[in-house]
Image (cartoon, rainbow, N blue to C red):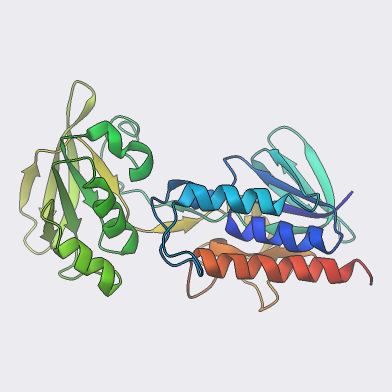
Length: 302
């Protein structure tokens, strides 16, 4: 039996693994994807203290190596359920089950869907939720980015490295992004902004995106953009379906914790973007994880 099982190997999980193993705990991290979480699809990180600029994958790899340097273990697997047996917790994946004295949920968030016709069918064929992954496929083309927050604007800027034009579709009449990111967008000749517009439907040719129909937020009038890809960045939803029966989430699905990252179920913690909090950033996720790791380490001697 492990002292701690961490579900999710993003910044929160990696930080928790580092702190807990350094304190002497036996730790296993489980994740269905590559260690690093959303760092792996972040082109550049400009707000990690001590590093003026670093690519997301670089930081992810450094965190991963450091996290395992004190004996932590990692396995791949998608967790489907957590069972509370009071004295221990059982973590069930799609292939096997594990036991631990404590569990940390650090699964993060997933991209929200546009909920327009053909979105699902065209995912991977012109609809993408990762500009870093798929942007180079559309070199020299025109593409659309949906959203007005930090993520949308950052991805629009990144895409200008490859495409001729980025159509930025914003349903409001203002951005919701940080001022410095707005300035970068407004100063980029390759970005064309469409305020008060929202995606309506996708027009297909040869089973790929050919055009995007957009709707005026006020009048409902439709117009078309000749784009070969659509990148939605309209918000995030927590990955918590597998813990709904534990009664630890709020109405939006985020996990409720105290300042020690403890949920209402003894021995189950949550850290990072998956929990109810004000600011979701790499630096705050690592803070959450460190608190959990320290808590678990202190509990070894009790």
